[in-house]
Image 1: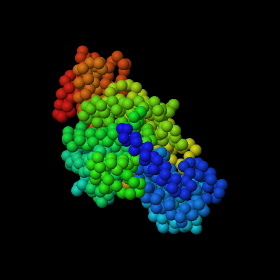
Image 2: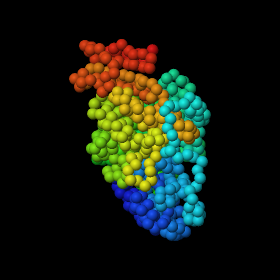
Image 3: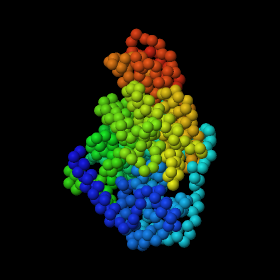
Length: 581
């Protein structure tokens, strides 16, 4: 860890030198930028970057170092540079544009143009001049999803289209989606596993092929998942390692291992945890935000990542962004909880507990939500309270400790109060005074719908269920539901909101070894939509006492599926036996 910290210091110094080399006078405060633009009758150019992004480094080195670009900016623009990891509201609004994203605004906040990815200097000079000549907004064929009228359910035509797209978008050669950029799509893979566990052998095979293919994105030397591969296969990775992906991939490989027992998925999960522990874990709590793709900023690092551990360390270690954001830390915690559920790894549960305790101590807001960073310039942001709530609900399921469901419920109520959009769904940030209004983002609303619905099942609180349907009603609109190649996550949300989860309850004292064995057996039951309660009667009623269980003389488990419930189960091995009948 000491060696990593030394390299972090070196990386930070090089970053400061890199930024200092540019003569562009960047602002990092959007409110100040728009105030200056209004006062000086200028445009605002927002450069939304990611500190781990290779093409952001190239754009720094080539585009914004160009004298013609610098002259155009100095004459007519207020340059605004924001790290998208630090501003989830902006990151979610422009997520589909990729990083770097370039958006030019009029002084009143009207969007004029939006561009995705790297823009070479000649193209940037031409774009900046064209805007000065004609500042009218570009016409877009895509609707502004913030203004879409919500509907109340998922129409059958939309469901059928989503199911057809899910099947058609599957890549039978490599697994995953049929895209030039290959990565493990979290919702498609989870939907495949969900249908597979329900008896669809074809979908289970697709889910396994997707998980198998994406294992090539895991660094064989240090562990950890690269962001994606180009070329339509998994053999041409881009080497940035995002903390959000480590948490999501860990959860997916945990689900895959629970569903199949495949030793390869165990190895994948362990490789992810090995990397997280070595490179992302902060000594005093929380997890760092990302690791850079480049050892030397702007230079592709394929030769470097082909080296062994000693060869890499001899040259140095790519910069790690040492921000500790709530969202990133909570996603790691959730992945660790799922891995404990699937494998029984007690150390994973200890790490998750430590991470969520740190979030509670360092990032909690007074009203139940969570900050993004130690101090936020805007927000609060949906993603932080959402990720924290999901992880805390998972931790309750894995431990039966009541404080975690209480914290999860408080986060759910905070989301409902602060992010609900009148047009449907939930916006990425509380509106506040930000000059660029936050809008609902598709992936966040899928996750919000699923979290609030499961929270409602655990707590019995109707308000959470209503809020979940509010998110689904926005997702159900045709312009949103069918806006991408495939959105199996909407099918997952709709499936879960319309059905009861697999429900397991263990009754008995928590200090009793027999009760613990029954609880562990229930914890190992595979499932992507599962409610597990541990009822020690000395703690009072369950959070959702919706079933009247009999008083028994010894510890027992009860299992309810969508079709049936068990009689009292006294032996741990009989839990799986009941479910296999």
